[in-house]
Length: 315
Image (cartoon, rainbow, N blue to C red):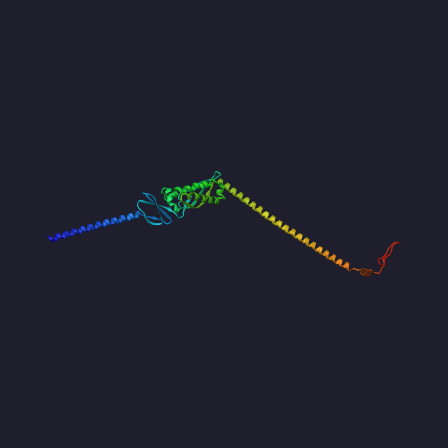
């Protein structure tokens, strides 16, 4: 009997030991599972190009700004992310980027017309002011701020700029100038909210047929004016060239005439000099000798009773 009693006791003891071990394992598993869940709920991942603003539910915004990577965060804290890398956004009728629906919009002009435009822009949040941005927008995320504030304000402030220009300028040759002005205007407007606008571009501008015809007429007139100006300038240049050619010809004629006059003067002076030399070399005897050599031996024939014949030239 004692043997069977000891056997039962050992068996009971082993059962209790197994139960105790199983209970310990269950408790340990529960603890590990709870730790994993706690770690998962207290871990926050910040993507590349983003920062996180930590909000303490008991004390407001913490001074800590989380950079990219994994972070352990208390369950009593909330993290809101903001992009500090360049984000591209669209307000367009096409299904493009973050604009799945038709987000094109109309803008007014100074001459009472309206123009339909498609626009794209890029932006980012100022890393040094994200905590301030968090407070300004009452804890909204960067994505929420884009949809509820940035896009509507881009539309409203674009309309303020366009209202200063006639439709022919917006649709025509001043589009680049207006785009540059809008870029500066939006940067200044958004900067006070800690939002940096990098680029703004009109991707498409459309008008009604009547306005398009008026713009085309203006463009044609402008082209004709430019052509007339070019022709006038060409005529002016040709006239100046003709004038230069005439001046050159006149100067050449003057030079030639002066050369001829100088040549004649030189020839006359040379002849006069030769005559002077000849006159200086003549003597009375030489003159008589020349007369004698040139006389043909005949007496001159005269008529009349009163004629006096001169043989040697002396009366």
